[in-house]
Amino acid sequence: MSIKKWSELDIIKIFSAQSGLKSHPDLIKGIGDDCAIFSTAGNRHWVTTTDILVEDVHFNRTWHPPRLLGRKSIAVNLSDIAAMGADAHFALVSVVLPDNIDKEWVSSWSSGLLEILDEFDCLLIGGDTVKGSQLVINVVVLGSVDKDQAILRSTAQENETIYVSGMLGSAAAGLEICRNPSLFSSLDHQICEPLIEQHLNPTPELRLGKVLRKSGIVGSMQDLSDGLATDLAHICAQSSVGAEIDAFSLPGHENLDLVCEQLDTEPTTMKISGGEDYRLVFTVRQNMDEQLQALQKNEPLGPIYPIGRTVKGQGVKLITKDGKSSDISFKGYQHRSG
Image (cartoon, rainbow, N blue to C red):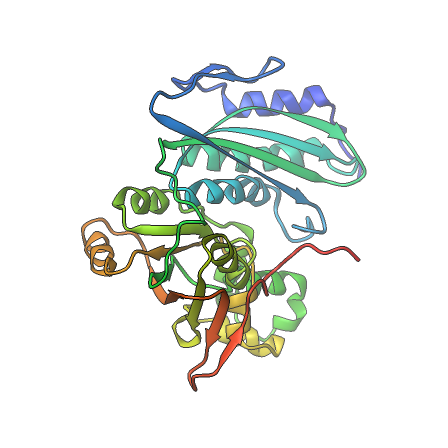
C-alpha cells in the first residue's frame, strides 16, 4: 500500500483548516507567526503544563486509533490543569512524524485533538512539526486560575480525608487487554470495552477541579497519571505528611476482577499501581467532609470515594482488612533506564 507523503506545510494546513483559527479575548496572535501572543489576565495567575507521548512507550498505533490518540494527547495535559483547579485556555502541539505515517492518519489524529480542545474551550495556538524515526507528540497547555488560589500538592495537613474521583485500575486493565487480546478471548466484549475505553480515551476532570478549588475545603490535589501509590506519595512527600489507605475502600470497575483473574494478579495491586486513570486524588480539610457531601448534593460532581486519611509521618501505607500495613510509596509507574 502506498503511503501518501506529508510535508510540514501539509500538517500546518491540516491544523489551520480543522481548528478554524478560532478567537479568544486574550489571544492577540495565534497560528501563522513565529510566536503566539496573548495578554495576561488581571487578577489571575497563569499555569502551564507539558507532556511528551512517545510511540511504544506511551502508546502503540497497532491498537490506538489516531482520533483517540489525538484526544488523549490533549487529555493528559488538561488533567494537570484540572489538578490545579484551573481553566485551560491555549495549547501548543509539536509532533515528530516518521515516513510511515500518511496524511490521512495525521488528519484523523488532528480531528480528535481539536475535538477535545473544543469540548474544554481551549484553543490551539501553534506548535511545530519535524520528520524523525519515531512518532513523538509534545503538548503544552496554558491556563489560568484566580490569584493565589491554585490547589497544590504541598498543602495537605494531618487528619485530612483522602478522596479519589472515580474507579482505579481501569486504564491499566484496558492496556493489558490491548496488549494481549488473545488472553481475554473468553471474556465478553462488553466486559472489556469500558476498560479499554478508559485507557484509549480518558476524560480530564476540569469541571470537578474548579468546583473543588472554589469550595475552599480541599487541602491538596493531584491527578492520577502514574498510579495512586506514586501520585499520592508525591502529595505526602511535598506536604511532609503520611497517608493510610484502606484497601477495602479502593473503588474499582465491576469488571476489573474478571480481568485480573485472567492476568493472575490482585485487583488491589492494579488499583494502586496502574497508571493513566486521570482521575483526581485530593484531601479534604479536617472536619469539612460534611461540606463536601453538601456540595455533592447541590452540584453533582460525579462519583467521589473516601479511601483513607493523612497522618503524622511519611509515605503511603496500605491497610488490609486484617489490619496489616505495607508501604506502597512510589510503587506505581515510573520511567526507568536500563
